[in-house]
Length: 502
Figure 1 (cartoon, rainbow, N blue to C red):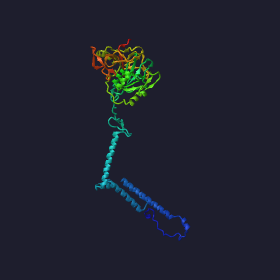
Figure 2 (cartoon, rainbow, N blue to C red):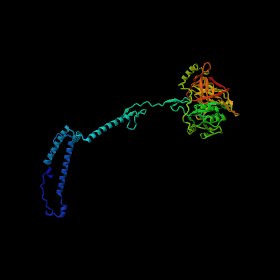
Figure 3 (cartoon, one colour):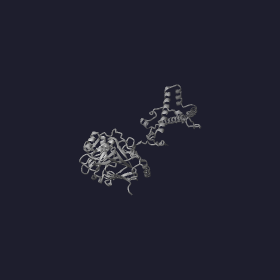
Figure 4 (cartoon, rainbow, N blue to C red):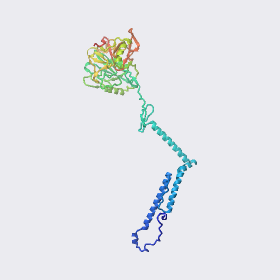
């Protein structure tokens, strides 16, 4: 290949052994190797030129463009110049071919497709399927969610309001339907309208005050229990939310009739013989602190039997352990109206209601029941809060759990016949089934009507009184949503409903 180089040709020399040219063997090893160096130089030059030629060819084929200028003449041999010119011509031919037809690989692919090669057809189909799938996934990613994993979802799912830079309006939130609770008319989420009621007997002896847990009850019944001393039965919608309910005392048969109206669990500490027989005979959901339910009560400070406590937490455990949270009876609910929005609406009602319902007392703000002494009852109407504030024995009735005076949204005063005596201990017998005179007080109005209870299990209802004094059994008296105190007053205890003196 040395003769193709640009330098002048070098004549070949005859190979003469070194010994014949006068060199010793040791001198041969030290003698400069000019021929070896020349060969290395020639080989390097050849390699460089081959590399240059290959680079030029590759560039011409890849780009299909050849410079308009002729390649500069080199100082190499005529053969080298001839190869360079041939390379330039080949590049120009490649450019012209590229303008007319596809590249060699593309032509071969089309030729194979025309010849019907299966692998080419399959490849085309796979390519098309890939493009379709890629496009679909791209569309879903754009319309269906953000790249952080949140998606628009379906149905009522929440929408992300910024999807790939686009603002998307969020839909209106799903509002859970609301319904009135059976026991007190309070608006609650659907499904919570009929929790298992729990009734707790609470003592009212003056020495055990203040009470705990009365304010949180949906309904409180109050009447005499023995020797002129009154007692309460607090009825909760479910277990309630009271840290303490105290002091818990014994059962009486007429309280059991009110508990039966709503199929309540009945929490007490023993009871009169008649009451205990009634519990057993009618299979009440019994929670007796002196029996199997003792673990749901505890003794606090003070002397027994006036120091017995329970709580909403304990009541909830009793409901769970006795499986009392299951299906329940659908008892008759009282009729409840919304609380008037403001004071002005209540003042308007005071003008219009009397003519419509013919109340004996209208625009009244004081209710008094003469149980006497430490057990005298008094309610005063607070127009700013639309509640009745309670006094017990001449003092503000305070709930220890809240530290505030007890209030009621509704106050019902129910007259019953005189009581009898169950025993020499002064325990009374009271008839609370039948009908009689009653007053319903709410929103600063007290309306006279009639109460009616048809049987032990049937709900006590209140009806309007007609102009002629008869009872309109088609029109129940309405209450306002909230807690209610029912004060059952045997004859001859006094009832006073009046306008407070200014």
